[in-house]
Length: 172
Image 1 (cartoon, rainbow, N blue to C red):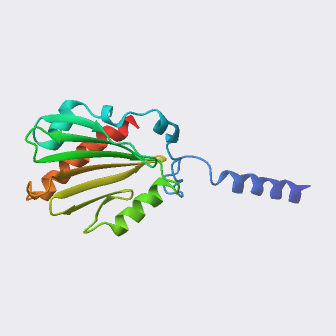
Image 2 (image 1 turned 30 degrees about the horizontal axis):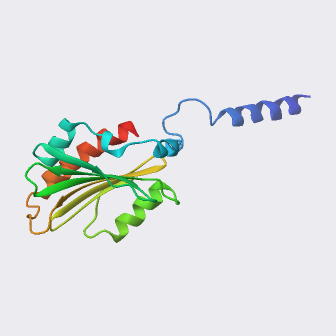
């Protein structure tokens, strides 16, 4: 009877060893945000305020134009100068969002990691920041029109895009 009690006690101790809030225990991956259903109802042009768009553009926003396709929802926002625009994109990829961002990062020119699921790239007259947000991929781009100019302060532009991306992902 004592052996049986000892084995039972040892089993209980081993079962409880993984419980509690021991910070040195293995980290569990967070559950992904289940936001894929939002894709069907969202108006991408409404995901950012005019003040947020102004901060990202560096000038007041002009006309907004929805540019949805079968595979993505998008919004083009001109700067009032007419030299450049922001392009906001929301995608519900067929593969996982993090896998899609990893693929996009791999094919982007001069991609730089911001964090595990976010990257930026800058080339000539374009800057992009893309992230996985739950089941969706969100991308914000700053693009000069042809012969409109080139990006001379890439860190500042990427920083503005990253701030806008953060505001959008809180809504998606």
